[in-house]
Image 1 (spheres, protein in one colour):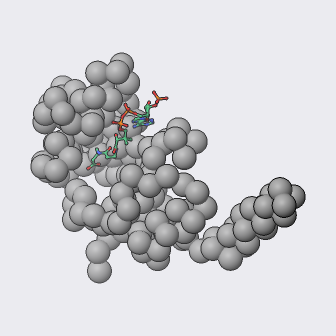
Image 2 (spheres, rainbow, N blue to C red):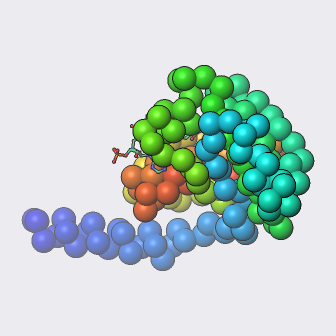
Length: 158
Ligand code: CMX
């Protein structure tokens, strides 16, 4: 009984890997960088690194203000908390700073990718895609399931 349970569990795992490894990541869409103040942090990126800040946006439901810089195909997204309840403020209060999350651009749909990674046992933060900054469809995966890196999946809406 126990042996057949273990066999079935392993068989299911390998079948999942073989059949469901369909997700296509085209590139890193952006790196999310947590800062206490965009105003104070931005000069390093613009004046020292020479990157252009091309947009700022407040994302109300995430309680953040964002500033976007383009670095080749990859963007940097500076994230400033707009409330003490912001997940960014809580993260900063714990002594963290710098790269907060990595966002991967999914070619064949965030919804498909969520179903695939969920089937493989990854813990989802968002059960379905939602709207993020710049109008992207996004979903987060929990860092406890992703080698400690808060992972965002995103796609450009058609
Ligand atoms: N990177 C890696 N690990 C992280 C993390 C991060 N950015 N944020 C939290 N964690 C870890 C913590 O260290 C903690 O680990 P331990 O239990 O070992 O201490 C664990 O995750 C739980 O963290 P927590 O402080 O208890 O925080 P919560 O569970 O309340 O929330 C998380 C964590 C990831 C679920 C939450 O931050 C979240 O939902 N994030 C997704 C949304 C988001 O980040 N929005 C801001 C950006 C918006 C945007 O880009 O527009």
